[in-house]
Image 1: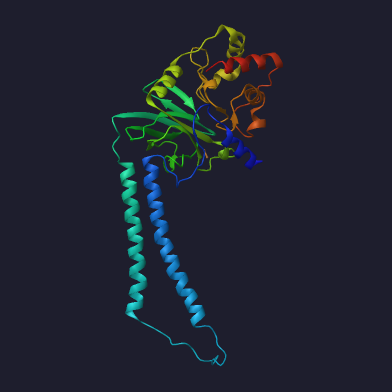
Image 2 (image 1 turned 60 degrees about the vertical axis):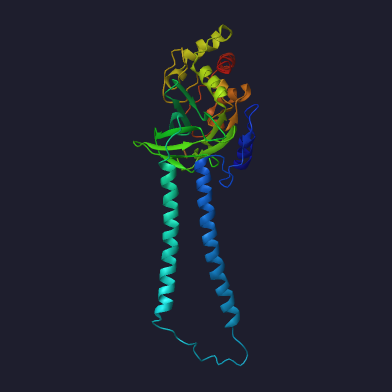
Length: 334
Ligand code: CUA
């Protein structure tokens, strides 16, 4: 079940976008991830040499000093005590190796954390919730969820800085092809940055156990060129109102939905759940678990606990026509 859900997650596509679905730290597509890939290979190389040396000595010793016919079973091998050379060799060499690994790692951590932002830098706030991601764009007055739109550039001139915090428990932001993990901790601000070099959708997930639906706290970074990003941001700034769906809107405003969700231009100003002002512009529902289709949206509203057991959205037990109106209203929020 878990595997089929995971595979379903990988198949959710944003129309027209390249999907970077392989969550592989060895295929980085942003500077922090590339620096971290290099340090990973360096560490693997050093430890591989240690492994080969130690394993060769063990194999050699087993073969060279094995019991042979005619050996005197009561005779001890030569006992070596107090050899300064041997003691020094197996103390100094490991210490040197450890210091080299610490030093090189610290240098990379320092350079990633203290990199100065390029001029056109987008600043975002990402807030972890059980079990979804709130994403605020303070410069644009936008709030969205689970799908983070950012500009990309092949020359690294566009970067996005993320201020990470949590509304409840510890979470961890991880999009392997863009950067290493950074925790989202209650009452604390952490920072990270990404500079995707290719357009497309990068998949990631929460990387710190945060409760029963931790594994379904999925995340997508949609990297677009500047103009597509600006167009998206402008679209998100609008409050939508279509008279075709006024019955659904009235239903929405009459229900307890408004206590937890925001829809721009309506009575809904709840901050507890995801902002729904442009729900239909997102490709997934329930933090990346299911594709955003009218059928799935209906299933989700009808009984969120069936789709995502333990999630904090209650089932409203709506009847047929009201549910359909609600689904067409929410589906109109592009
Ligand atoms: Cu959030 Cu694990």
